[in-house]
Length: 104
Picture 1: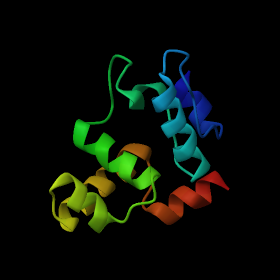
Picture 2: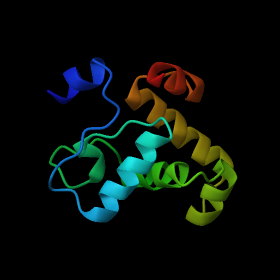
Picture 3: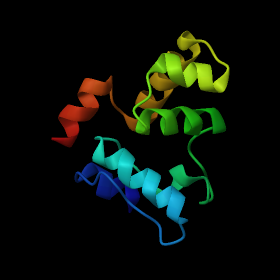
Picture 4: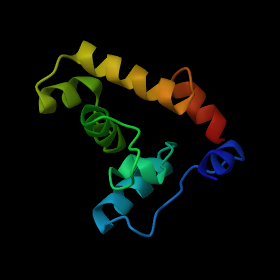
């Protein structure tokens, strides 16, 4: 059902089990052109993202640069770029521009 909704253009699918902080994060992510589904919260079984991917995604949703996310996580900017590419692959987009274009 989630895959169908996303294919039809849904940007956010929120679980009633999400805590307020996760919901706030999800809304901010979708408002910035991202995609959110229940598995991304870490609460649902079959979680799709690693802890590192979740942390990088959180930094992105807060508007941080790759460099700043790396500093916060103790990782190089190159490592963050690699994680961002993994996130794009999981989201089925080539890059940030594709993400924005597909949400328009």
